[in-house]
Length: 243
Image (tube, rainbow, N blue to C red):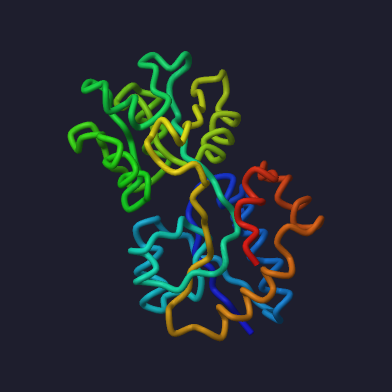
């Protein structure tokens, strides 16, 4: 049995290693779950974020790495049970020159520019907090958004707080600083948004098998230990334990 898993370059969730193989927290979790349900061959397909939903819908691959669950996305694909809960944050230049610590704070600075990856939920979150479209710059790849922060073309890049911490820690010379959002400052609910694997809606057999295994595995000592290697702690795991 073969399953093709699509992923994007977004450490610590997924990235392409120096040897050309896919790695990361979401890649690791998918591998454990798929092998446990009898999958003998896992192929990894690198793609862009904007292609994830349409690609799995069209059957170009069988399964996507986790992404945030929203009602709009749930109309397009079938989601697994949640596997993590993670809040948003910014990547900014050292010292955070414009004092940006939430979407609301950025909305109050008309001169501030925010980078967002096309199709990600941060776009809606920013607009809901008053950030205007002229303040938002859309990128297709995370690497391009990070380069724009480094060059000063934008003032902040919005992504998950966890992902931003990992990116900042990997860049030499502390060239970037990660700022975690206070949900209350953004006018959002305090519970963390949840992420889940996604499938073509007609692929119920694979979805059901994955869900059964996730429910027996998530939160286990092995799961926590494996995720800790990628920087995920109880802060990200516990909000998703819904089984």
